[in-house]
Image (tube, rainbow, N blue to C red; front, side, top):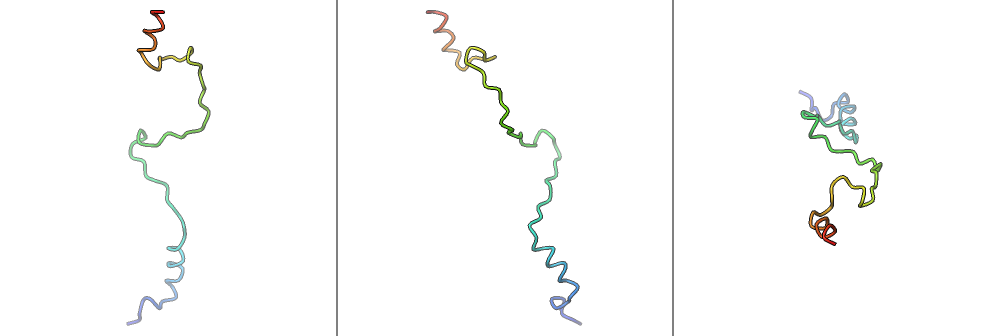
Length: 64
């Protein structure tokens, strides 16, 4: 029986194993995919925010 480590047919297999190939991850639930941060966020001034930053700040502003 020959030693499989000396087999020339395995040279291509070994070369393929040395590559930096990373397969795409398998997504079972689309909600688990990370959000892509594209940097296109719209910056709003504090007065135009749909939700106040701190509820305590709005109370003190109304009292003044």
